[in-house]
Length: 163
Ligand code: FES
View 1 (cartoon, protein in one colour):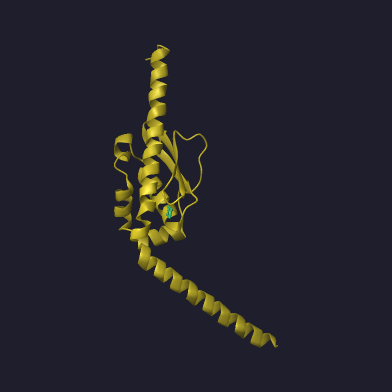
View 2 (view 1 turned 180 degrees about the vertical axis):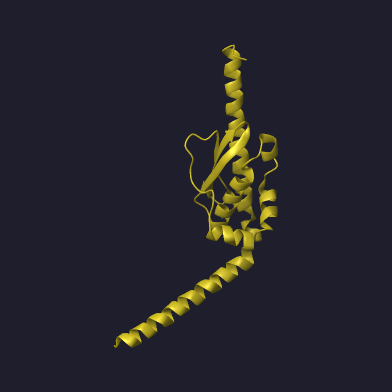
């Protein structure tokens, strides 16, 4: 086989793969919406955090797990991140839960639920809506963890006579 023919076949294969990828991207974009699709391509806020002020790990009914890490400064979320072993939608929802949490006080964090994540994304396919609820629930659990730790700190300061 000549080099030219090999190159030609290589190009055809590349074109085929590119077309296939474009088709998959197009279908994903149509099913999940532009915002979710872009986030899926360029994931943000994914990763763990050392000594978070608020942390939760929740396993959803589907069997997938979500973790959310919150760092607070002056009672506002300074940094947030997530990890999941779940589907692409759970990663997108965890990413938006973290993004939406940054800059918020505990009172404002209460407002971030599966519904608000779905609203932000403009919805998800029906069978994947639960991924947003898993992210919302994990965020609320991480907030509870922060509130409990904060309460404990305050309590020990009172006990130590520092307050
Ligand atoms: Fe389990 Fe998406 S299918 S979180």
